[in-house]
Length: 403
Image 1 (cartoon, rainbow, N blue to C red):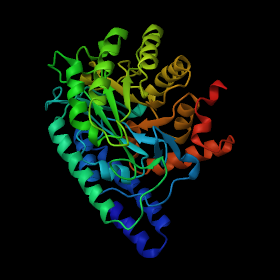
Image 2: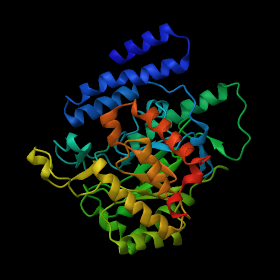
Image 3: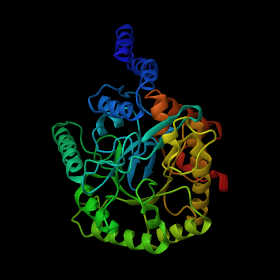
C-alpha cells in the first residue's frame, strides 16, 4: 500500500509514464524489508498472491534494444527470466511477466497434488544473500495448473481476437502463449512414483499445449533418488520417452514446445560429459544450469533445522553454477541454448553468465531479497555491460570468454 501511495503520488505529479514506472518500482524498496520480518515461506506465499492480484508494479517502459534476442523461433524482449520455484502453481504468470521479465518458468508441477516436505522448510541466510529450501516439490498437481493456464490462454486468445492490431507476419513470433513474455513449464515427479518417465510424460500430455518451452527437472535435492536420473542411461531413457510423447501430439504450425533438462551443480566431469553426450545425441533443445546445491557456506544459519539437507540458492551458488555452465558450453560447443541460473543478483552477474555461454539467464533468490525494483536495475546494468564492451546484442556476447 505504501508503494502504491508513493507511485500514485508520482503519477499525479507527472504525466510521464516512464517516470511513473520508475517511481513505482523504486517505491517497492520501502515495502520489501517488511517481508523480511515474516516467516520465509509465508512471505513467499504473500508475494505470489500479490503478483496474482496485480499488487505489483507493471513495467510500461520498453527494454533497451540491445537486450532483445531470438531463441527457439521466439522473440524475447530481454534475456532475464524468473526461475521455477517461485510460482509453483502458475498463480501469477500475468503479474510476473508484467513486471518486466523476459520469461517466467512455473513449477515444478507434479502429476498428483502433494504437500512436499514438513515445515519449516525454507530458511534465509541473510549474511550470504542465500536461501536453504527443502520443499520437496510441493505442488497442487497438473490438473489444477492446467485449468489455470487454460483460463489464461483463453483470455489472451479473446484479447487477440478483439484487438484491432494486425498479427505479425514475421517468422519470429513476438511473445508467447502467456502474453508478451515467454512461459516455461517445469515438470517434476511425485515423491512416491516408481516410474519417473511416466510422470514426466503425463505432464507433457496435460501441460505442453500451454507452454512455450518444457523443462524436465531431474535435479532437485529434496526428492529422494531424483538426481540419480542424471546418469547417462537413465537420462537417455527419460528424454526419449518424453520427446516421443510430445511429438506424437497434434501441433499447429508453431510445432511442439522445446524440451530442456535442468541439471544439478554438484556433478563430476564424467557426469557432465554424459549429460552433454545425451543432449547432443537426442538433439535436446536446451539445458538449465543449474538447480540448487547441497553444499553449505560457512558459517551456516543459526537455526539448527537449517543444518539439515536441502538446496542452497543465492549468491554462494554463483561461482559453482557458472563453472558448470562454462564446462557444459565447451562440451556442447554451443550447439544448444543454455540457461544460466544460480546466484544472479546484478546485471554484471547476468553478463558473466552470458559470456560464460548462457543464452538466457534466470534468477529467483535475488528477487526475494531485492523485490521488484531489482528487475529494471538488472536489465539496465546488463545493457550497460554489453554496450561498454562493444556488443550490439546479447547474442554477440554469448560465450565471449571462449573467443
